[in-house]
Image 1 (cartoon, rainbow, N blue to C red):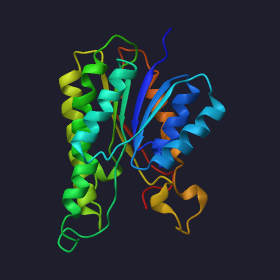
Image 2 (image 1 turned 45 degrees about the vertical axis):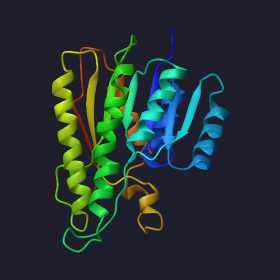
Image 3 (image 1 turned 90 degrees about the vertical axis):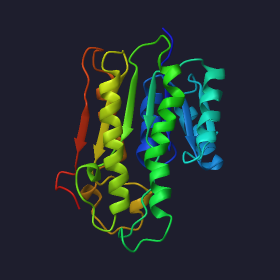
Length: 237
């Protein structure tokens, strides 16, 4: 049986990195993108130390740049000719109030968190339609997709939009073999929390989110987890 081909954006940190290792352990080929080549090379080396029998394609991609997304899809088309799972994970958080944040924060956040998923999904849709098993699109939303976020309004708006995109996509694809799932994690350890003086168990681990993604992906083809809402046991911060 051919190995599944998994595309992960924002693959070198946090949940994206955990997803990369999780799918590697599932004997999947990986198409990984991020902004920094050295981070991608370091990740590829670490994965290959655990799984030398899978194929890995790494590519620097600024997901806010549509042309870079197109180039990434073209490279995957040339290498494998199909895709089984697309994980729209890349995103940024720029703190600030809606009325006082620096000019351009809103546009940058929307382009990175929302427009990227739209363009990435459209670019990879033809490859997702190719023959294969367990076709799936995962969209990284957030608890902020359903809750107003003080001092992070622009981020919350982008994630509300992401959830809306996910739900519309789910509706459009429900008669196809491609499943669509929204991921709504609460506070999860990542670079954004570096230096935070919090107990280790106050936030979730990125690996916990990755395991939930795997569980949804492994379901029989006639069942779809539409949303995964997962919070720290003690609730939101």
